[in-house]
Image (cartoon, rainbow, N blue to C red; front, top):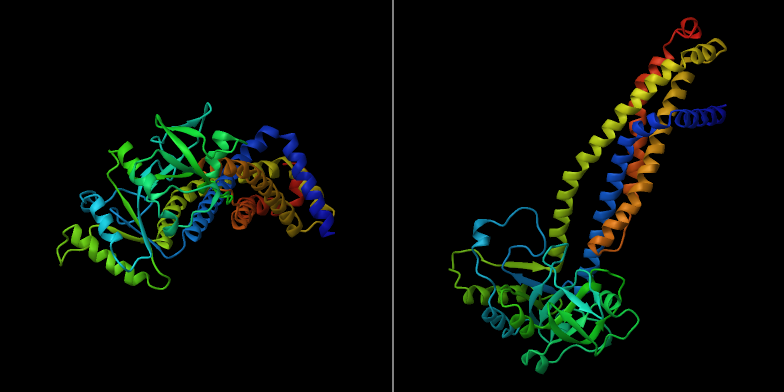
Length: 413
């Protein structure tokens, strides 16, 4: 009996949708938009988190970054006045840290490009093709001793090439595919912001689109080509289990070089690899706080629309309700039928929202340069929320239908 009731309810809902296509579409629009936003935001957050975790694991937890800014990576809001007034990390500071005995390896970084979307991107081209969003890191020749650098082919540059400011470069696998396609890029030439560089090596394809766009060039070359990039990041590799000792030594050296008074706090940032992850996680949480109310607003509008169409449905089917009651249907049967209709209606909207959200999430992840990751919780939350909206929005119309007097209802009034 219950199975038959459910089947009849589903058929009734689809008949109503097909009979009033425009009204149904407008009714479900709010639910569709709300669920789409939930799936889209959840997928973007999961994709970014997965990519960040992969990069933290690749760079290993014993790598520490010393920067002018308090926190490395993107951030919400603007830096404080004190942070903006800080001097850049100088090359003298880099040399002072490199002379310490506690670190295993030290290398500076000069960054040309952006870790995320930005209008100021390097122009890299070869054979009439342009690379998409390349990220250029000017580093020392010992950089593979600091951070894991796996090569698919070719080699890293040497100390002689670095000191002579040779225009050589190691490119990411994604950049190699974009510029050279199936041709071996090693010993080929490319243009970077108008200068010609020779490709020495290609990074191994690890499936991470972010690492696929990273390119390494000699530090001195990048410093000479881009004198306007004053900032340095100091990447320090610590022996396992001795991170605190290394941090203590480096902090003391930087405070000395930067003339920080004894009683004053550090005027630079100390960032472990996992702190980069935590910082970006905070940003993602902030994005969620901004976007989730938008999704809730869409679902609320959708709920109002569903309630409206259910009230119209009760009015249109007053005579049908009277007939059902006259042949033995109980109030709870009528209540269940209309409540089921509302839930099924919003669940259809939830499914459409998921089907729309997934391709949008793929496009967003592709634009951001991260592999797509769709969390189960986002899909489940979208469906569960849409069903809950159906229950809330359908309860009043269902109660109204169940409370109709059978004699009055059968007359269709």
